[in-house]
Image (tube, rainbow, N blue to C red; front, side, top):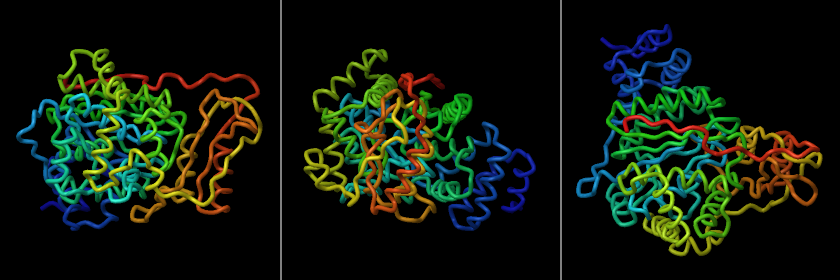
Length: 443
């Protein structure tokens, strides 16, 4: 007879769990047979002892099969490609850019994503800041939007990988966020539930990501790649440099405004644009629409520049319950803060280094991130006009502009931001290439 405490002990002591043991524990978590404390003990045991590829595959498939898998009958399933990010400060907005661009190029891009975790935001929280947007639409509505628009972004509903929801929230508060097997299972269970035929992932590394070193990022990329390939899913993983804030904003509603500005051509941060086009090109090639990455990138850039991607994003928002004029006037619909003030560096100089994790934690202090899984967040707070590595900070060029609910929260955020930025009196290099490595499996 299988018992949860015996499964926890076995993993705690370094044993290899069977498929049956893992499936049983996942089912117990889904059915509330085990407590949050037992789930936390299990995740800590996995964090400390790790999992084999076979164990991780079993965990992933058990979480996928804890709910419904979307059926895309009637569509050209070869073109159904998912995109994912392993999270990073400022990185979440890229999904909101890539999905409409890929869709405008002929990719079918259903995207099931998540909320923010720890010091990294989440796509669902960003979209939840849009009034009326249904982050948990009915299966029929989600499929309708994907069929008509070419892509749609939603959060995991109660019937899609419900077990992951139980594990996800416990991980956030139990110090087990960085576990490679748990990250792999969480990501791929939701992705496989969406029924794709290919997957492109950006795996961040650096101070603003959960994977601090490129070796850690490679380990996660290969873990996801091997498990996805075992499940019959061709996949590409791009290791990205997140040692600085990606883009110019941090915060839910503020990053949505950056997305609208990017798609409409008002302003495009160069590193964000580079990563967006690289990911879109990979999706287009995986879908069999273009023969090579150079051709695919040209297609993506054309659809971005001619407004087709912006039109798809606007239609997605409207069909999922958001305002019909959202692309024309996002500020009219999104929440704003009463305190909006710049933060200047302690001493003038070129930005040499960022503690990007601390910048992410600043959003939590402002109220835009979670300290506990169930607590609500303030969609309006955050930072805009964020300075980049190599740029000169002085009285005319602040580090960023803080959007806060009160003077006290502004002051706390300003202190954290100043301490996260190191300046130098001498010129400093800009950030290096956004994509450091490409890893493919099953192609």
